[in-house]
Length: 563
Image 1 (tube, rainbow, N blue to C red):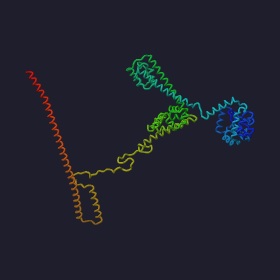
Image 2: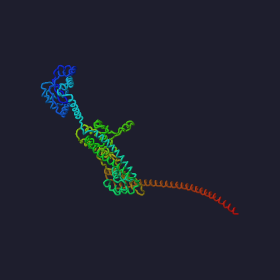
Image 3: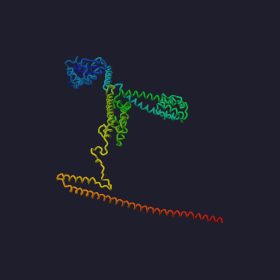
Image 4: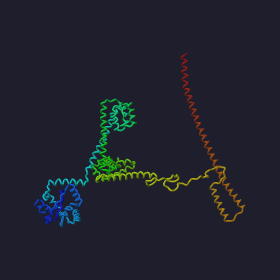
């Protein structure tokens, strides 16, 4: 019986000398306490050495998958003719048995035997010292862990975390420095802040101009457009700013240099972040962009940690404060966090942002897992998912349009306008209106009403039938019948005319009564007005008399004084 043992240096085959001791598994570990007793149980028969680390890694990875490599098969064919083989993995034993027809077994005795061999390995294999075996095992374990985790130095996401953090800090510093430049130089040339809105162009123009009196002589074509340049020169001639010294201008220009250098470094950092994101997470970048993807990775801690999160967590990542506040106050939870700044959500209408953010978070979670565990820089999955999300966005907008036009699907349906038809109804509300001549009541005309004409037609029709059934009547009788009919018609018409005349007379009487009542009310009103006017006249007369009497008294006093 042989024992297959794997080492970091190669494969070793041990011959079991005393198979009887394998029956006592509990006492087997005691046999390997010393080297002499271990050599009585097992003896090295053959050893296959690995040539380099890559070969050792390939052999180890195949053994982890329970697959014998080509070198192992050649080694076993050469040294295992007609003998049973003890292995550490039952699946590996089955694979060897299928391919090499070598009987293999795996039990507790084999595991105890391997444990004892491992404890005395350097003594049982000559030429393999402990000082050589330790670095071999360490290097192989590192290589194996890199292979299992698909580790690559190009996929270090900590660089992305640091880069996006520095980019945000640079944005804050740039804003504070630019505002300081505007406030500082605004004392000298306040009109420039409204003319040049961009912070970088403002710093460049201040650095080029210096004192505002130099603006008329300088050429700003490299910095500003022609219209802005002309406006700047006009404002510099009539500026209301104060004068500043040369020392102040030197400090302001130094601050402008700082702003420009920070902006240049920010552009370089953004290019670096863009390249790293396309290398590490190309599918996530295709879906949400470089900045949003980098912020998601930084918030999650790493790409692997972010890959462990579900889509619902990625959707609200960055809005934890709002989420816990909503749960505490029992209000609606937030629909999006950092993912809100993605271009797809920005394109959606406000009422569709929640649906698109949910769909985008689900696709982003798949893209993150694919980026974290795949090899290469393929972004086809991200581009495909982005196309699907854009189609869904168009579908949502099309549904809204179709609903407003009256169709269930996205295609708008054109409906013809009909004022007599209800919305969604198939029948008319009312019948088509026709002119009713019987509503006109005009005196002096003796035309028959339409209802009377219908009755006459019905009577005439019956009589025609009778005449058709019988023989022709005498002409005299026909004339008499016609006369009777005419008399009846004239009688009905006279009755109608008399009724209309009576109605008109009653209407005239009512009008006269209304006129008389109106005249009586006017008379009463005029009477009350006249009484009021008379009272007013009496009051005025009394006031005039009161004013006249003191005047007379004054005149008498004057005459007496003169006498």
